[in-house]
Image (cartoon, rainbow, N blue to C red):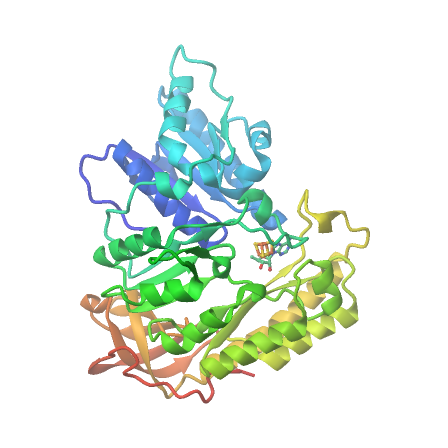
Amino acid sequence: MRERGLTALTKKLHLKTYGCQMNVYDSARMADVLAPLGYALTDVADEADLVILNTCHIREKAGEKVYSELGRLRPLKVQRRAEGGDLLLAVAGCVAQAEGAEVVRRAPHVDIVVGPQSYHQLPELIARATRAAAPGGPAPGRGIVATDFPVESKFDSLPQQSEPQDVSVFLAVQEGCDKFCTFCVVPYTRGAEYSRPAADILAEARRLVTLGAREITLLGQNVNAWHGAGGSGGEWGLGRLIRALAEVDGLRRIRYTTSHPRDMDDDLIAAHADVPQLMPFLHLPVQSGSDRLLARMNRRHTADDYRRIVDRLRATRPDIALSSDFIVGYPGESDADFAQTMDLIAATGFAQAFSFKYSPRPGTPAASEPVQVDEAVKAGRLAALQDLLRTQQDAFNRATVGRRVPVLFEKRGRHPGQLVGRTPWLQSVHVDGAERLIGCELAVDIEAAGTNSLAGRIVTGETTGLGAVAMGAAGMGAAA
Ligand code: 5AD
Ligand code: SF4
């Protein structure tokens, strides 16, 4: 996130973000809400007047991290108060939503617990917390908890972005989930599926581009379940929304995440062929290759349904790169179930993927399944699965070496004179280049590949008109 340039800002806000991209988007919006109150962002917790931890509850480890961070912040708050000042501590995000008052019970020095639907209420919550902490005010240490799902939409109540934006930005179009996969807390922490109206999304996209964005990633817990009233009154799906976004002047690249296989409709798949700005990359979680487990997870699709979607996508856009999420050690997962997941990976070929050991989450149906898989078995399966995925990712990246690809430059690299950008297939690319090229899409000859990034050389003088640098399909589809 960028530092804000206003000199009138007097207070410092430290925002620490855990978990998914929706939290990254929400953190930026919290900074937008608090800027008019005089809060400027700082990377240093020690100098902050307000620390917000924007938390993740998806797996147990993610949740526990919050309490260790709160433990680290406690002495800082104690010291501030001893000096006659204060440090306000807020816990936001999915741990706040799921645990509510329990957060304050476990960490009584927390001032505010605020769920993801209530960020527009932050100014009021901060005012109340400040009054509580003031001399003569109500006793501090009884944190304020705001975790109701309010009737108004937070999107309508958040201020518009007005600060310069990064080259690649997120735009939330949808929030919440009605799918109720048996392992997942999201339907409980983020609530029911909600789609923002198309007109609001298009207005935000235009604003983001005016402020410097060149790539927009549409976000939602179930982004391809997005549906909304279109311009002429009819109902739009995500494919139609993407076509409308492609008309936004100056927007070079469009992506969307995270999708559910059940919502990959024909129009969205067709958009991958018709819309040059829509990047040939799709994150499509499948979780398991075993039909028995998929049914028990309440995924409501089979492994073959997934294979058929991949076939249709590749027929439409032969160079599309695929990513997915996998869970190993779901309750009752047998060796045979796991072998089917490995088969699906081997047959599909992923450019990248995320994989996790199943983590029982309180309140979800899978957590009370009687047959939990042994931790050592989970660890062994995860290692084998990640080995296979790494091999595929390596092969996918190696297939880019020797090719000329369009790269959108996003920021400076770690070394002086270095730039970092991305290919259409979401690979990071490092090149030597001048800072003024940030925001440009240029042709790059790829010279080397590692598991996590590529290195190359800018083809001098050659900018890429959309689609001007044609990529053949060979070697860019199935990586294995
Ligand atoms: N345990 C492990 N992984 C999980 N995920 C969601 N819930 C759990 C859980 N209880 C994974 C799924 C999902 C990704 C965001 O996190 O793979 O797609
Ligand atoms: Fe969780 Fe399933 Fe909804 Fe994804 S689709 S957010 S895994 S319940």
